[in-house]
Length: 413
Ligand code: HAM
Image (cartoon, rainbow, N blue to C red; front, top):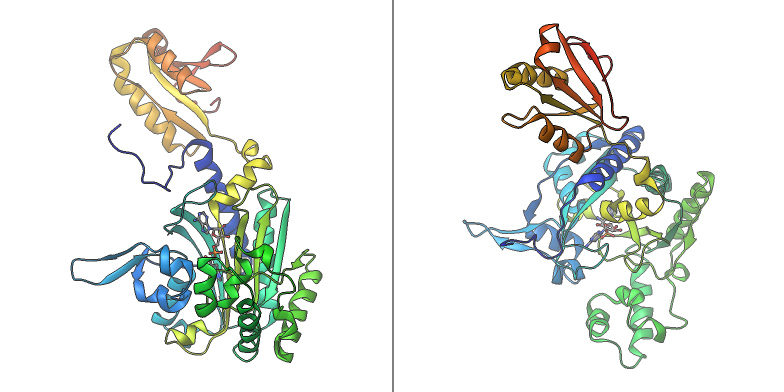
């Protein structure tokens, strides 16, 4: 074959496409029940938007962005995540001035130039929610409830919800200082960690290479100021009130720089190394940093492909029902037009079926073979003798039975 899908991308079809639509439908319903409204933003944005929001030193911005120039020399990037675009839109459309709280959900393709493996792609789908204007820990808890409820609605059971607090601009510098002091005393840090130590020492906490060398690492929870401590405790109490199990994970720092206070990640026990199904947290300073009014915010996103992998393992795909397929065949060529008109009527009837046929210029035997191949449950045959009596034949392709019904009657389909 001359062309292949680019590395790290994949086609979604058949039962996977069905499952993807179902996951989206379930998630949208849950978002809407919590008062979130859909917001669609462009797939590409000014590259600077991601630099300013996700952070220059993050892996996403420094190594993984698809950046390009358009014909006028504008530097654009395919979105690596949804939050930055939603915040840009929130400010640009002056939602920060016109509505006291904004609750938005989104879904769509994201792009990251990562090394592809199972569950990690260069183009993948995310669904997420962003909640603006509410600084209460109840907003953090509600976001986590949303994420957890979506995963259980698609049948995923074996999950852990890991939470941590990253503090605020008041207390985090002290923690950062303690980390730099601690990590500077460790010999032979990997190349990435040596760079991170200067630019982003929190990221050393989730290094996969050096993690064994780190014992008794300073913990953010020991450095939280009173406000952040109270906030983190309230989030935990509210999660317990909503019957959400969670674990506190001191090493959870997330790969994006915009967070403060509570962050979380939901992992699946059924997946391999790419086990993060969803992630999110609070980002109270981002709207202001990008030029809007000072507006607190919290949100999350899940990776649709990973959620599908976990859902498949829990049997979700087996519950998906494909539409009943009905094939319209002709025993006599001169009935092609009548059969065509009938198949159009059938498709327009609003029945939960998928109609194919008729095919012109093929024998009835080969049309029936075709019907078998596409796994039609029923084939409707237009034959001259019956048609002249105002009737058509319905063949049950599994039972191998057939009967005649009036041309005008769709009831038996
Ligand atoms: P994130 O943790 O970078 O957060 O991504 C969220 C989810 O997207 C991950 O948990 C994972 O399921 C999925 N994901 C990420 N990268 C890939 C990939 N290469 N292939 C397949 N799936 C992937 C964010 O993107 C934040 N914007 C979340 C957020 C919203 N925080 C606040 N609001």
